[in-house]
Length: 282
Length: 139
Image 1 (cartoon, rainbow over the protein chains, first blue to last red):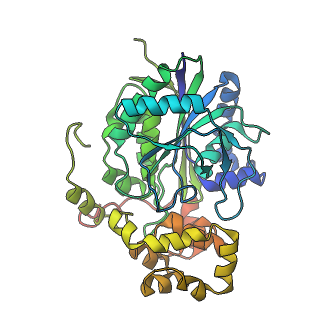
Image 2: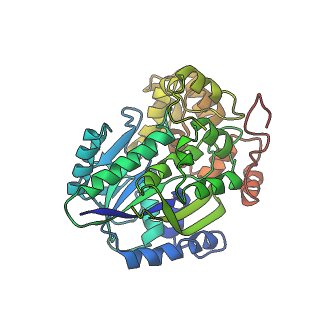
Image 3: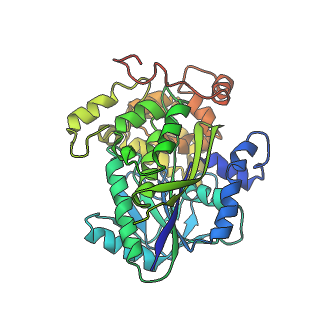
């Protein structure tokens, strides 16, 4: 049986990809950010997941205004790094896991989550930056990936509660897949940032850390945080944090924190990172 | 917090967005208004389109069914005006990356600061949420 063994939360700031690609991860600006991921890079090597369900959002790369799926799951064989206007990032192609992805898609639809199925798309920094943060610069990524793209750009975006419930349904779906697979789920984006308007540059260390606290243990308070609170407290782009709730929802009733990191700033954004393990005795 | 069973009315939900200082939430109304502005920006993902745009910006815009106000706002790189006219920052990013601007520099043009001032603010912890959460509540 496949099982979800861990959840990872991480920001996916494009500048982190630039730092990796240009070899700047040890300099004064980026050093402290990347140092906070070293524990996780070693842990990923030791735990050897087979598949990562990678929850992220597309930033006007694969999707434009023509089609706006709320929840879309990638069921393809592989995905190329998107050209976001300055050439694709020099990273390996991302290998999919179509058998597991289709199984999850079918299970979710039967479970009343009406997913959009994507067979072909390019993946942008929302997906490739977390891969670089967790795995560095290998010739080939050490895991297969099921991309799960969430609309967090055009409102209304899905509620935190709906995201959490989707995570719960993903857990059920994974556990009914017959093959023995070690599956992780990653929630990416955030933390506080605002990239637009006169209020741009807003960061909220206190709120972000409270949010990280809420992901640990058996509280489900975070699922009921309304959009307006993210918008007021964490900036217009802080709403990406609802994607972390899909990850959290997929870990079951209770979690244990294995690692946590927070750093300000990276460009316009507060960097947050957490590694969680399901802690369910039942 | 929202009670687990409570469902919010769409009009109340949208009305709250107007109470956030210095912020244009990308609602369906803005997405409709800015449809062609954003799709124009998206076209700059292709190298040949970027070349045509750089060669003659005004001419390039002739092919897009955007309002005159949208065209002028883009030509002036007035990004706050673009947001008012339905632009979304992830789409507008195609314009400023074509201009060779970093995200942070482009974002700083929407504030009342110069780029060095903005960068300095970010390095010192960013803009505080204090007093920046609500227009009516002033908190």
